[in-house]
Length: 116
Length: 116
Image (cartoon, rainbow over all chains, first blue to last red; front, side, top):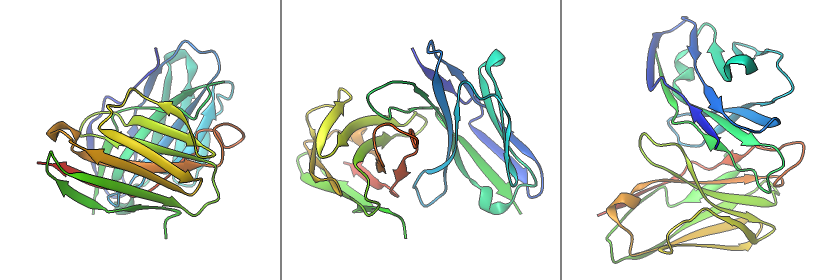
């Protein structure tokens, strides 16, 4: 069975603080994809990143960085120097390789509130 | 302007009403999806359409009836719903079901449904 766990339901930080959102996944597939999506108050989910299971290199995009560790089945997301505009719900998701559809398994999300 | 437009944004209906949710994508994508987002639960995939053909029905009750007249439009017809069906219904599209952009979905802002 595939499962994504985001243990942090809500996180509140003050602007300019760094914050890490945790994601732990379960899968029996040897090949799979991991994702992060952002859902701002307007409602639409916005794709942030995709990682395949063979690429454990950490990735940095501006203030965002992702730490993928297969040994602990984790794919954590760090925002450096957080800003109020980062306030949103963040979803981690998993997809097995070779499926007939883009069937994403989402976690329950982490609500990030960045206070000015 | 978002590439995926959903109407109405908010809907209140009684248990005996019939209503429809509409989704339109302006991205030239071939696949479209309905997701249900309930509080404190992971996003649930409901239906998948590829080139107007339904490829997945994720054990959704028959009181939800999807319709995809063309690759740009997707409807969700609602009939005799239950209060527990109250949720945010999100429409999404992707270029294809698989490929280099696998898992990269473009979401609308959702239709907030309340069933009384």
